[in-house]
Length: 190
Image (tube, rainbow, N blue to C red; front, side, top):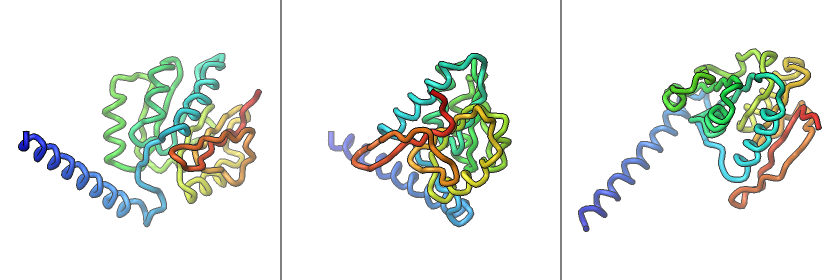
């Protein structure tokens, strides 16, 4: 029994070290922290974001193009792509390691494409629904870049960070684990 406990503790220590090394790697290659390391959507914020995206996808009269900016390992992209095979999903992430994980996770889904690049290089006019969970700097850059580059009918759902140069049509309280988070929705038509 003691050997099992020791082995589990060793495995946990190794996993922790690997995780820390990933963050060091991500910070080094992130252009001096211009883009943060992958951090998965979580808690109420994730639930609300998925719920709001489902509303848009369920009400669509034609297949939509959905983009997840900074898709990470796919905590938003994968559940939606599996649930809505009639829609097209594109995930952008700059991180080589994370891109490999999400590409592997969605390898059997015909409606998903993963692009390893800076999402600021995307042609936003071709998308109907944009999902993002960014940091302050990336959200500020994105809000400047989206000005005039979206379809009039496009909906943007931003988890945790407001897009400063855009007016949200709805702000939803998404307090998670004691953190005062919000989900910002832009362009939603009621």
